[in-house]
Length: 506
Image (tube, rainbow, N blue to C red; front, side):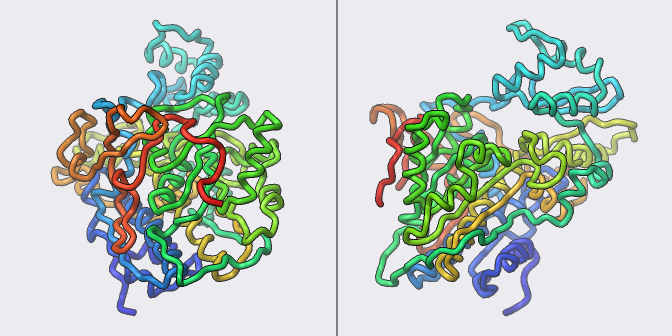
């Protein structure tokens, strides 16, 4: 095989670590010199085209194992980084989604001249943070009120207090501080995605006489995930033809602005796992499922009887095994393994935002200062990368059910993905933030011309056919023989209860 071009090296490393055939990598085409297409000192575009490319290539390989049909996969880096912000670039009923952020979410300076980031997008998280600060929520509450309250706290002390209360707040660190932190040490050398055999099961039966219009056709996926990373994984599997059933609960708060985008191509249903009848419905779904995808903290579903080993037992040896895909924020080892976390918090705690602010200041020839305000990425890069790596890991496991049989566990954590992104290296501040660096399009309606050129209309399901259509970005991985299911072949459920809890085909 000829020498590997530099833009495919990150993909090659992850592909070969999963035991997949090296010759398949020649089917993947990525953009050369991708990291000039987004304004960051980190290689976010490399991460975007690599993870989206791996998800597409692994789907095409599964299709090849089932049918013998080979195909090429093409990913454009600019399209990929726009898809890393897909939640901002859709419109519904001629309106953009608006901000996904709560009014008090974000960074605050603390008494010890440090910074802390709070995540308050869920109402109970907002109430919890305000309670610790001794503030009452009201329409008159402003960020200034919150900032004054934080000046009574040291950053590390508030971080610990928030953790004790199950809330979401993390102090800003440098890379050096994170590398010395017990959780950083626990993650050392942990890959961004792992695929592990957890039980014996018969091999998945295939027939080259079968015809599949899409790689994951007839693959049944239970998606018990929320916010971004897990739902992006499920959406990606749906784009490649899987029957993805998103399971949520009326008892859990929703984020409609995100749910509308990440549920495209799926069916949606609602079950209450505190109700015996609904637990039985989920158990029956598992019997015929191929994939169980969940993104709750380690141990959360075990407490309801739906841990990985329980799911394998429910599946039994019917036809073939099951893939248990588990995603969390901080990993499965270390003192933070049970803490809540989101992309923005992981960016802040692991050192990215401090490093980004320093690079930005250098690009502007800013004078040296003791403390720069941490600078977030222009996209939720960890969430999206984790989602596509999860889809990739699931596809890898599906391939292994053909070649080896068995049930498999796929693990992805935002913190391990952050570690991988950091390992890709950086671009110079002049490249990342200079005049030639491309910024992200504004969120407008009508959409920016670039966004419009990469979007399609998605018919709605779960609502009246007279409703106006949704417009959203197309999938960035282009498969030559089995194109992804976009609005021409898939619908957007819009609501979280569009379907009954059953499979389309058994």
